[in-house]
Amino acid sequence: MQGNLTAVGCSSREPLFRGREDTCLSKDARRLPGDGPWKRRANRPAQQAGFSLIELLIVVAIILIIAAISVPNLLRSRMAASEASAVGSLRTINTACIAYSTTFGGFPPSLASLGTSGPASSTSADLIDNVLAGGTKSGYSFTYTPGGAASGVIPVYNVTASPLVVGQTGQRFFFTDQSAVIRFNVSALASASDTPLQ
Image (cartoon, rainbow, N blue to C red; front, side, top):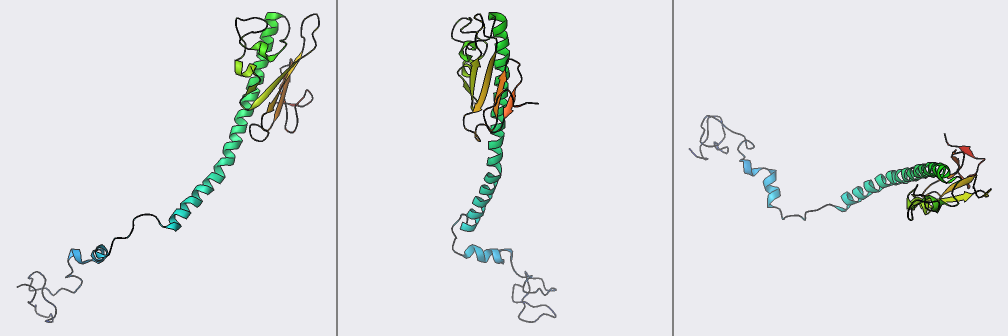
């Protein structure tokens, strides 16, 4: 009762499957599990593994689109961080100038006088860090201008903060003086007549 037997109602061309005499199976039903289209594919010569040129171009295009969206946002947020740091530095300078004035009777003659270069004195008050005392910090350049001395005391000062590279390290220019009001200008060096920060 192997493949040559036929059942009642089956043609002689359709042998029984696995010895079952009462069933006549179609050609597709007699196919063994290893006889499917996957077997034909396995017999083909192996193709090279990897990505096609189209797939690689699509991936590169997606990466470029993401970069085009994110890079300008990154630069804007970096400029905003530099501007916020500049405003914070101006507040620090104002606070240091008031502390200097309280201790030494008048405002400092230079920004370096607020920094650290030895024991605390009128020429090295140890009120701000040496990076800020050097005049450049976080993409901004700080210029301290003391007023004229009266009886050996400097009664006024002003400080300007300018981006080192306009449009890259910052967009706005800042100004402050002994009033501690910080003002800004978007197109030129800020002055006492510009709009104060809110």
